[in-house]
Length: 294
Image (cartoon, rainbow, N blue to C red):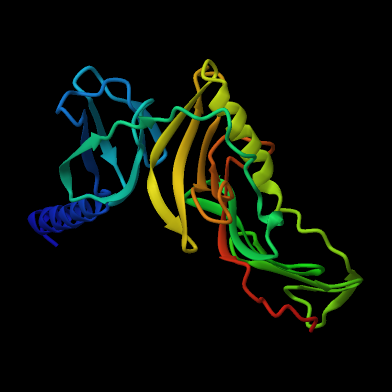
C-alpha cells in the first residue's frame, strides 16, 4: 500500500475519533437569577439553593451559576422577612435567566389571651398524612394514620423511599401487623397509642411561646387558606438568632368548634439523625373510618 493511502486512512480514523469525543461532551447550562422586592429593588443576601449548591445574592440581587449539567434544577429562595419561593426550572442549552419577586411577610401581633392550641388527639376521629425526609424533595418515610375513639387505630408506614411497608391495625385489646415481604398478619397487643396524633400539641405550644417571645422569634402571617374544609391561617416561625435553625410553618384553624387546632405543620428545622423535614397534615375530621381487624 502506498504511503499516501496509509496517511489518508489515518486521517479518517483520527477524524472519526475526534467526532466521537466531541459528541461525548456533556450538555451544560448557565443560569442567572435576579431577586427583587415588590418595589423592584434588588434583594441582597437572599439565600438561593440551586440544585445541590447554596449561594447568596449580591448587591444587585443576582446569583449566576455556570456549568450546570441537569436540564431541570430545583430553585429555593429564602430571605428573612419575605415569603420563600421554591420551584423546578427547566433550562435550555447555554444561558438562562430567571427573575423572582419576593413578597413581604405580614408580622403578627399575637394576643396574650389566645386559647391553648390543639392537637389531633382532641378529635373523636381523624386521619392524617405525614412525610419525613432529608428535605421537601427527598422523602424517606410516608405515614398515613387513622384514629377513631375510643380504641380503633390504623397506621400505614412506607419506608426506604417506597420499598418497604408496615401496616398496623388495633381494635380494643387486639391488634394485627403486616410487613411487606410477609403474606400473613402478625398478632400484636392492642390499645396502641397513636405516636403522631399529639405531635402538633408540642409544636402548637412552641408556637404560642414564640408568639410571646418577640425578642427570640419572628412570627409571620403568610395568609389564609383551607385544609380539609377548615379555615386556617398559615404562620412562619423563625429564630432571630442565626445559630438557632428553627424554621417552622403552622396552619391554625381560625373559627368554629375546632378553633386553634393545628391542622398542619411543616418543620424544616434540623433534628436528630439525618432528618431535617417533617410534615404532618390533617386529612379528615370527625368522620366514620370503619377500622376493622383483618
